Image 1 (cartoon, one colour):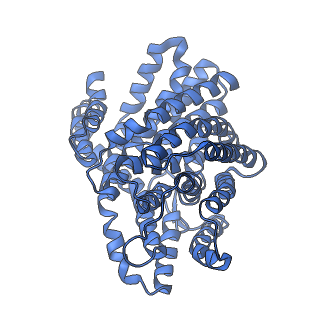
Image 2 (tube, rainbow, N blue to C red):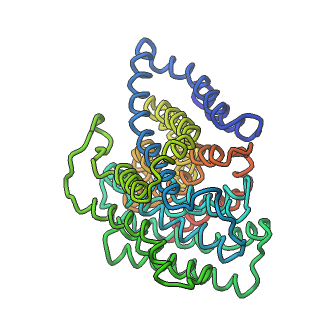
Length: 459
């Protein structure tokens, strides 16, 4: 039976690693490979199970799809008409758009919007292909705080611990990971033809250290929901000022006004304590009228209308079609595996096989769950119960287990199959996830190291 259960993952990873098929075709192959195991588990109830989980997948995928569509609309609204203006490439610009600015936008909106904006900025500098995608993914290094932290809230509720404590614990390995990313960023810059000199490296390392320290401080002193916004916002201002010092401050503020409007609208939406919403599935958060997707779409359309560019909306939305299909299919696969118990069963089998070393499987399982589900919400929903039970058997504090899973699952989601499929769809140049994963391998290993070190130190 275990061979049937692991078959869809082997097919998915094998097809993606081959680089011979698109992410959409690879996911379709994995969905087909999952059917024998689902039939064995569900029997005569298979039809009802597939309908139920597919409807849930549509609900869950619809949210990031709507956010990505809104992000593309917003990008079209704030971009200059005509072809994108080419920007001179420099290590300071690559750093600013890839990490602090991308992280800031992701902290405000979530759902990989930070990576979408980073990718566009990198392409305007002439960075293309898998390298552009790997740099854009750096915008997703603080996923647990993305979109003001819905995944962290859900995971904390499942684990039965305070979300503030979960976020505080997740901040420690995140800070270390940020520092370890510096050499990888410098390697990517050199590959892009903009190698950083010694002085620039020290400055960037200092900004990464500042980002990590501010994240720890913000989680310690204030609500975790805005910790990512505060920490990345401060560093973004410093990094952008270094990369492109404004000649005219008023003109710079006018150019930034749509972004300030968006941030203000999103934060104002959070002040509505219990907005009306749609909750078709009891186990998952409500979709409120103040959701990031709704606010983003309204602000984007408003800016377009104010600038007389509403006619550009259809073209911007068409760009979202292929990434939307990819995200829907990967969320569908994640739900089939999680809803059937396959994901939890494989995790429990691994934990039992490892025996006393089972706690050290927490990080690998968290990362894999993030890669498969593609979101922090999905990762926590799929494996947080298993991780919590595993931690209880090992005598670990529940908050520690939840925090480490939140860190690993968020990091895995940032480098997940659905997100990379989306970026490949936006690149539309034949780039495959396998090529991006090869570039990101040091980052994945750093996540495992940082999380495991946190487990050893904090337990």
